[in-house]
Amino acid sequence: MINIRKYILLLFFSIVCFSFSATNNVYKERMRDFIKELRNNTNKEKIIITQNGNELYFKNGKIDNKFFALTDGTTQESLYYGDILRFNVPTAKGLKNELLELTIPIRKKGKPVFIINYGKGQKKREFLKKEDLKTKFVSELLPSFNADKLYETIEDYNDEDINSLSEVKNFLCLLNPENFSDIDEYYQALRNTNYDLLLIEVSYNNVFFTKEQIEELKVKDNGGKRIVIAYLSIGEAEDYRYYWKKKWNKKKPKWIIKENENWEGNYIVKYWSPEWKNIIKEYQKKLDEIGVDGYLLDTVDTYQYFEENYKKILE
Image (cartoon, rainbow, N blue to C red):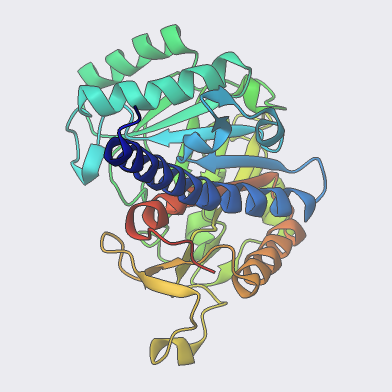
């Protein structure tokens, strides 16, 4: 005889689990869709690198080949050092293993993976070099969470021509140029380096590098070719960007949710909002105009905020 009470409880539990899973999948899928739109908003030669959010590459425990094909590389912050904004502190073993379960399959399938750690010290640098030999990742150790400084690379500089991400042996991640006096000093500092790959902010106080400057940055100081990738935050609005309207300081549009508690001036957005998508696509066009090789899509992991804070699917 069927135990009705047990059956009802089991049915209720199944519905709740299905609802929770469906909600989570919706927010991930919306981010995948947005990235696909950005892929289609530019020419096929442009390089797209995602920042964190590597769950996006998987569905039902397997790599999602359709989404995998949209991007050219990915990054993972704080894989080994700097978790939870704790500078120079090793990432907890459990979290590290979870991140490796995502990044290793991505790398094995052929996509370059760039690891951004936060710390200092020769022992940590040697550790990262050994780990990269095992994983085939390219790791760097940044001296600040603000990503505002040049730094010594894990792998030595070279004068080779870098024509694809798979050839990159080292990289610079510099997303906050406020330590420089103006855009010219910032440009010259970048110009005089030998990094294989530049993951950079391409503006200073909303003044962008010129197309000519970007072309010059594509050449290392030693003469080798390199790749220049522009920073582009797509899951958060930044109140220091030219697209930010003064009236938003008093009353924000409905698609702006709240300020990021860890980063002043950065606001979590409904990234599926048509208005927000149009803003980002226009910004992307500006980046195309100055001739960057591609984009570093940051805050793609904003879907996690909605999964954790909203049981119902937001419109």
